[in-house]
Image (cartoon, rainbow, N blue to C red; front, side):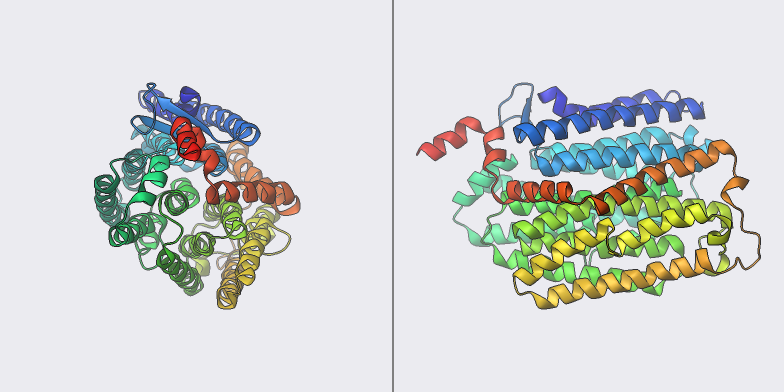
Length: 506
């Protein structure tokens, strides 16, 4: 079992090592990268089936039993995040064939891309905080390299802002991990669930909880710690931005959900208040930023921030329905957001710019691309019956169940403003004529490039449609994941079978 659970990060690491010496041959590198993503997708799908049929799975590397060794754990939340990450990895690696220049491939793009996927997968499956820190560092190194690959001035400017804020997060995370170890003597998440409940020092626990919110909040880009994101996400090639938009901030949200459902006790009411206010302000500031901008990728970047607010809202409300809403929203958002960035790249390829006032005519020249944009954009805005509608419905209903009417109102207002900013892109880039009347169509691209750009977009659009028109099994899965988060007995038994049984017997 240990090696099976290690494969989600070992496969991308092996792929990164194989692609590096082959980086001089662009198409060979791309083929190896796609093959690696396909293999990871099959393994992650198998892990999800195993978790769904047999419950949470745990493995101890080197037969060092928890809490002393390196623990890998897959429950419903981590299994679905692994699967959706592999899907995003596959789609972006397909798109990258036509988007990433030969120069960047020679500089090691595919190796850094695979290392990034390894960091994401390792974060989702690790069972202890120290290894979560290690995987965060792997992600930081790989993402910084991808940001500055090519060496353009604007990339270096965005990369420095990105890495500076993330180093602050790293410092906070290391500090909180050290203090937590000093308080409990362990960093295993399952053992921390037991040990921290026995610590009679509420001030220390509260302080640690706030530091963890700050550390993971920077990674997740919640209010007021998000300003590094719009400053850096529009500078690299769109394939890089797409994988960043789909996965990086979600790892931060995942860490927040895991930490505040498993490690810290549920009676820390003030942390819920902090998370609730952060969620509401993140939703509003993000969507207002999107409404104010007039550049395709900057609008989408501010939408990332706004959507993070919805994800944190589910954690702050802390009910089964709210957490299920967060899980469903996370899957929907990763798919839709990645797809929107990929479509923006193709739109720029056809029109020559990301500036909305410099482009137009896409509906007339490429109605099929326009349809694909419509699916992703209006799903993100929560238009029924697309996937975003069900995700928002779960969170709004969870708010109303707790009589949090202002929270529900903010969620609805944010949805309306998201629809406004998406309509702005639609009206400017797709509906109005191109200012210089020279908008290319999809058939002006070569057959190979058209296939490489459209296939991943179509795959992601089909997932969005499936989530929207057949939502019941995904909502059931999300409710199951929320149940495991709120009642982690199965997780604890998988990691610490002997210890948990002895506690129960006593």
